[in-house]
Image 1 (tube, rainbow, N blue to C red):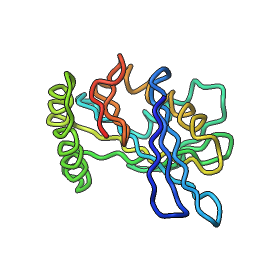
Image 2 (image 1 turned 60 degrees about the horizontal axis):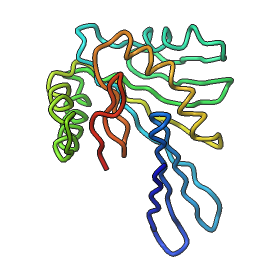
Image 3 (image 1 turned 90 degrees about the vertical axis):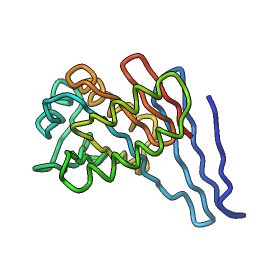
Image 4 (image 1 turned 45 degrees about the horizontal axis):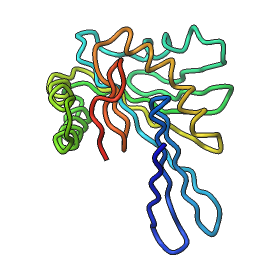
Length: 184
């Protein structure tokens, strides 16, 4: 496990952890004299499949789970709750919607700075992407690793049903075999 501590000020710090044994697991905490502040974390599924990702697909991803998931939203945005606690907000971006091109340009710039065998695959995927499912992970007061684990059914369904890559901020890009391009 690697831990990075960033000193923000004499009385504040942020922490990030990635456990490469279990895949995408991160923990963010910001402490200050007034107590802990909860941060959010972004993950994206960049799909190259001709079939777009829809909110019905997001619902399908969680439908077979025993836990009490709810996907509340219409069109391109929804909240994901588990046992009544909001764990994520999802937004579906497609070419021409205004957000897609901006998001893809940022991801291309970041990926272009990376080094490794998977760089060409990531850049190709971003270049031909047809849908970006952006997920803002909301940790709240819950254990961050439990919140990330609660989203695993979504990532598993997408990897099984849509060609593409999973991107995690501060980590990099994953295919079905694991991390293919690590980014800072």
